[in-house]
Image 1 (spheres, helix red, strand yellow):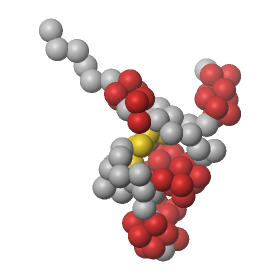
Image 2 (tube, one colour):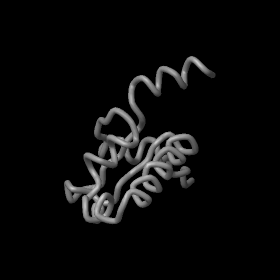
Image 3 (cartoon, helix red, strand yellow):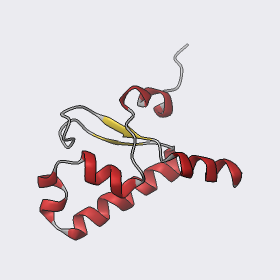
Image 4 (cartoon, helix red, strand yellow):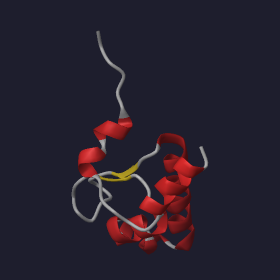
Length: 88
């Protein structure tokens, strides 16, 4: 039997910490692929990050776009996680 792929578990080994999506993008996205493309691009990346967190509980930056040269994943800040648990 093939089990369903679990994104929350799969990306955990690439987890980094950040205060929020804006901080995640600022710290881990290559500047030439974010701020170098202007404020509208950065706003779009932040919005996509927030959408991913709401929908999937995780967001990633590919190794192509990451300043680390590796995949990085973000699960939200501890404050966001606590808020989400309280609101359930």
